[in-house]
Image (cartoon, rainbow, N blue to C red):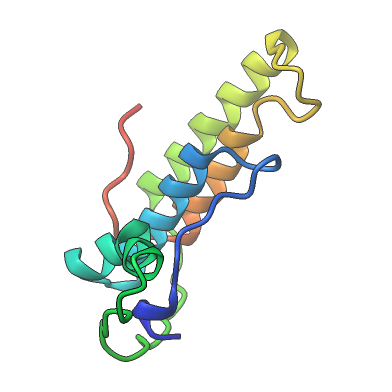
Length: 121
């Protein structure tokens, strides 16, 4: 799908807008979108459409990246996030029966999108 056809959207109540933005931006970087394309996906194109402007042409669809083995550093970070989840989940009281899911989802996202910088721990 061409980058100009992709719009960021959150998945409330199943996901927070912050998580959705993080995952969308990381996926866009992983796929090789440039700054203008990422800005469009994250809200620029939606702003144009709401203003009833013509959609921006941001180029053709990018080819899928080949899957590779996650680097050891990514696996360590994944394990750290999962360890945090196990340590904190008994104490999380968010009113959500899936408290701490964001740590598990972040661990999966990092391993599935090698390339963009890793978050600091």
